[in-house]
Length: 350
Image (cartoon, rainbow, N blue to C red):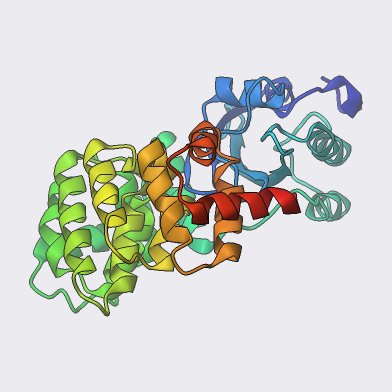
């Protein structure tokens, strides 16, 4: 590939990265922050697979890339549109490649001029995720590249270890929390968090839950978080804490224990909108069962909130894992009259 290689010669982002001689890692940064396998993304780029975790009709992707001579990665944060089947919009992807090639040519990691910076910054496919996602992404990249954590890591580990003064959390940084959680399977980290969990003040528990949503961790910690979640549900003014704890289980929501807890949650008379939204947005894997999803849909309709039902249904059917289960539910002879009516209205508006 030469500096003047036309963009038309480069068919995919994967090809662009390989031809530039870059090493790279891919991450989904939409619903959760998680690794995106290269071979899977190559199939997505060729429209052989729908994007696995779409967010509001888009693929939100982080690409960390670097040359062998440098271990410091560059980062692209992309939001690329998908079609109604969840397939990548080829025109948008090709437009992104054209902008990059025009600005940088073959050397993606070169020092950029002011003109190049202007061209890159006007790229319509770049976006800035929420700060907590960026913190988790930064931590994951450092773990994957075997780099040292930030300076905030040790103070948080010490905070968990000493356990004498839980209220003295002001020196704890969010980046330290995400660095620790990204290493939850290292050393005695899961044990430290397990022991600290009942004592964490809300100011620490909230960012801990935000970081945990992106990690898979040992069953002893899953069960501890489930116990805390179920306990929080029994306190009427504790909906924020229960929502945060449910969110913490997101990356483990296909675990049998989590699915069982979700099933019990949906057997309750009332479930808050916040919990229902967290289930669809983050814990969708727990809904990949016809009976559970049917019960979930019925809860959405309990307060006759057709707008909420419509937005969540449209979102869920874009997820390849959930789409076939959702269509089983809407065809089921066991659906309630309310669900049948809501589905009818949804499709009459389409």
